[in-house]
Image (cartoon, rainbow, N blue to C red; front, side, top):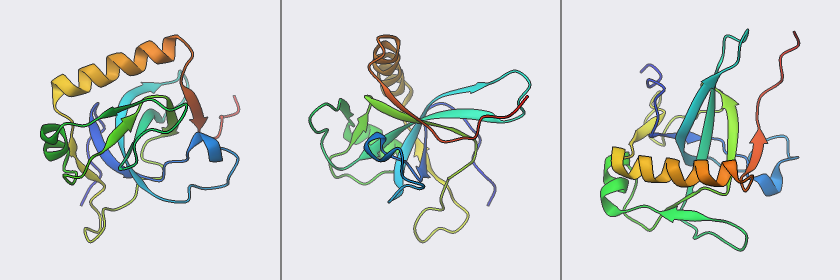
Length: 146
């Protein structure tokens, strides 16, 4: 099965590296993650992706998250247990680096998409925090040498 089309609101299985472990060589666990933004740098062929982690664990101290509605979880292909998308940290990586196949579904890397209205709300809240410099970033790619 080919990779999914890279678009906003896409929920993938990703080797997310938590900011508190940013110096570790790799993530300790894979998580669903939402593609919140994409961009290209001039002179670089890769697409860059900003991922937000999705977790069954409620946000802890110093973390900010948005609880997903049942509608959003169904649309995104996630289970019905409580889940949050954290908007206080992100991973920035190249596409499709560190994607993983869904359990029991070799070659399938995505769950689904967040509904547009919930995605827009999430994006707007994330962008506001990002502009206020309240988002912890983990850069997961090598900076190319010009």
